[in-house]
Length: 160
Image (cartoon, rainbow, N blue to C red):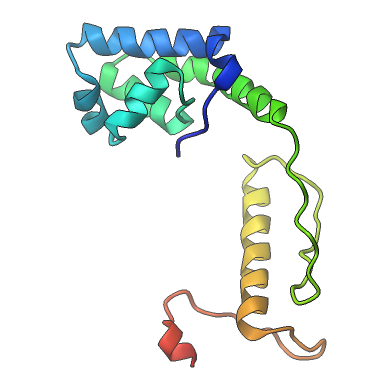
């Protein structure tokens, strides 16, 4: 997954070094942006945007480029600093306005914020999404009624 524009942090140290290392290694290997893109299975536009500083790219992008360009892990080693700059840039955009609460939709349970890299947090988020999807598909459940779980393999026609 690609991330949004680094905007004013495009000239920050880690992002700048990441871009320089990426371009330098690509050119040393005699690869065009298109050739690198094909090898790492990202678009040429992504490679160009990361090299120019219009995008941060992703950790997966860094890992694949390290592998293809045989950098010895230089790009992945820079990634934590680039990710920190990305978070700082995202924070400068300001908080999003909260969505208005609608009476026809259930309010999701609020759980304590956990680190998104924590597998338990991912499982909790998936369970919460399944519950919300079930509520949307089945309507509000009665307190004593057992909750139905939908199989992802069932088509909409099967549910009618």
